[in-house]
Length: 291
Length: 266
Image 1 (cartoon, rainbow over the protein chains, first blue to last red):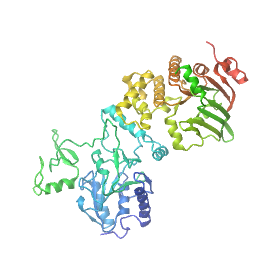
Image 2: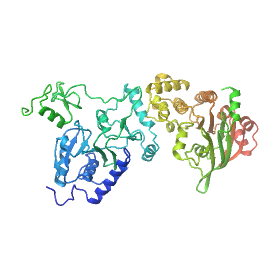
Image 3: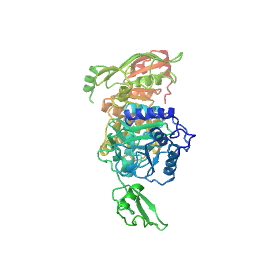
């Protein structure tokens, strides 16, 4: 139940109003980083303080919340944020992607296609895609406002010069509607194509850096590349060992100290629902029989 | 470029017209009432002692500092425009296409964490080049033109000697074929034999590409070699200007006479 000492979803109404204003501005200017007065949250920076504030500002009592961390519903970060909102907002929670109306995510986009009735909230550590190339904030702001994005390609050039291919595998820079270069948060580049033309509203919150940005539904998002080194949304070249899926993003799990390993879907809900539907991978067992 | 082509170019209109340029730092002046014309293909040297306002003047010309008064009219592709009044996007576009700026310290002009190829390619990518192979070929070509071995293309500038860093900086600036190059003490901090090679290289590039250049230096030997015309500054004002040989061989102003006679004869 809601703990009466707190307002609905922890933040007071004026704060939520301020955050909603930032979100609306972000939606109006897709990919633009809107500054907002980030609050102290009862969790450390790096644990999703930005995402939590955006979620708090968007939640209604009727919402059904899903929280994932690297695709999983059952890791510490996901569990603690889910129970935080269950206690402070009293909203229903779920692990099923299709049933959720609001999904807060850290570093993944769910495999199940999203719909127009859903909001996807990303936790963002460093919202500025140019940060490691240009340390000065006034300069990066100027570069965004004047569309000077040549430097972003210098980073990709360096990748190819050193590794023979674009070695950036997560946090892969994208261009939104031919205007702003945006940091998609550290999602694997495998997920980048899902950013584009997505029916759901996508919101990005960076708590420590005090920035919110957004992708409205059906926004065109293009991953940066070179003509002769096109963008490649790669993944591990395996099938999931539990559910047998050949087209989901995989985690590599070391299973003993003799070098054996298995590949499993990073999206736990996707993997479970496939197994429930009867798909079984190399090392999988039918649902219910699992130890 | 042949002498005839240069004459034809020069016959058109000045590339840069500077009128009454003044920059004050509070009550003190940085530079005051500087006026001159720079013609296409011409190299102008600005000499003077430390604190005479030469670097301030160069920064005002290149748009790094906002002057308090005066005009800097550049012959852009779409006609002459005052770059002081120009809005910032346009000025920044100029500074990465038609202009180039060579810093005294290559560390100011290079990205030290990026390979030589990336440094040369940055301006190309900034103006829209998106083909890795083509960018790399151009970078290789330019490293060759500034006498850096092509095998060093994937090394960072921090692994280069001072002279190589300076040559790399020049390659990085000239790769987009600018029309006007600002140089702030391009040979400062280099030993004499490296200086000589760099000057040789610069002279070759300036002639070959038909560049106009404004070179700030306190080294009279540099302007003697490179500059067609010379401006002598003292306390923020231009005290004498004219053809380089004329000013150096027959200095009129007392300060210029002092400057010329201060050079040690070996």
